[in-house]
Image (cartoon, rainbow over all chains, first blue to last red; front, side, top):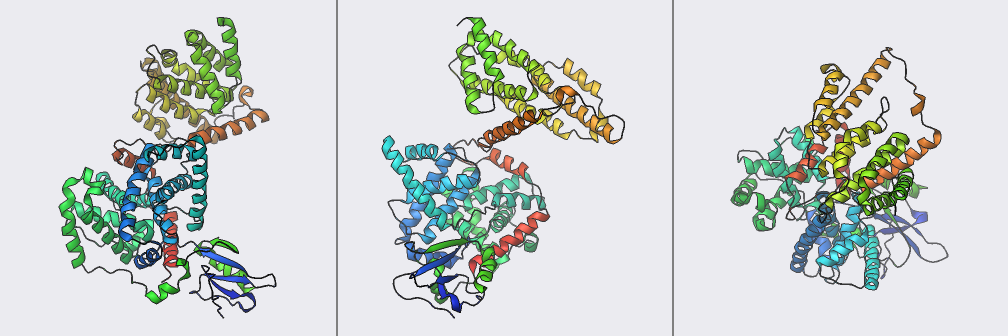
Length: 347
Length: 263
């Protein structure tokens, strides 16, 4: 029996009373036991990581957290070029930059977009990405550089306060990603797939450039790394040879065709709408005209996409609810740990 | 300070050298402060390489590497001390690091040679590949004498050193093959058996060195803020085709996606 509490207290998860707890069905992922003892209401919430979301789940999340989508998108490209400058100066490899771009977008799935702090969030993302990618830089070094890039001069006292502020953002970011530190690298799959397909090194280089550009879009929020890699490879071969097919042996690469189509769609709209902001425009400037043709051909192939989730289901999904950290305890889990949770509830 | 005193202090520094950045920095600044004595100090280094144990010799090698880095990156000095002498005696230094039949320092020497030759703007990619390709099957292709001749006939000090490292790797492999086939006894040269303390300190130092290595092994230098071919080449060499573990990863990823979308 489910008991959804009313009132202002909104937690991320459904709650039900312990004595009535029954093993949750597969659709009740966000369940949590509630300690309804005599001491009052201590709520315990379970927060799942859910690292990938569908297109309309993202729109749904933004509708809650972003007031002005146009301004948000503008700031996002500003932040990405800022991150690119910072990570080049700090000599980080591409994967650190990519992870930080993912974190930045991830942050605004569950947190309200604030025009005053988005660059601080960006700095935090770079810092956390450098830790998770094992390319450690001290926060002081990162801040010294990013402050310079932002022409922000701080006294030593102010710097210290600012550093603490970033550390606060860090813990917020970590909670937002549910302490999910699994990082699969799309470039790893890209190289491996290219080698399986016996692609030449220069063809593979083109697909790698596309992959790098793809992080400017929401693709990393949506799709798992191997799908992004395969989409980039398909687009690269299409650019080099117009007879190439959109279809490959998807099973061989463990990819769902619909997801690959989603990836292709995102990549094509990136290159059609903002070719000049991409890395590819520097090295392959003459390719711009090819994208329109590929897009037409892609639409003609009648690609299948993942189905939109109905808004009633979305509205019920408590994952997207505003968080309330004021009371109770929170437990962060990866999806695969759910089974353990169910067995605990069963007792 | 009179040269004799300076020499004694320098010896003291070398003998107590550890892999920590602090200790190495201290020795470097001492060496640079007294750079007019660099001929003297060079002979001290060679002498110490002869007498200290293998762990300390490795510390000295890392000191040499860092010292070269500092001097080369310092542009305003017209006269660069130490640099010429190190180049001249590089082979000698490596011979001290890797005595016959003890290869404990070999991997570190390869890394350091790669980094040192860069400072002298020398590129030996093919020799490095040659080093990597040495295995028990390729032993019969060339004889050790050929390589020995190469070492004595080559002019370039870096090529000499590479051939020496190749030779050492071959010799050790040869030795191992012979032991497996029962053709030779296990050589127990008491000079190179480590005491327990030495082994422990080696573990500690290796850990420290690895930590330091990880601080910089990922560095990518980009021109114009753009990703380039060089960065790609590095990643390209990092991975092979899909293997069984990868297929398992792919399957797990797909499960994560399904759980994550919740559709």
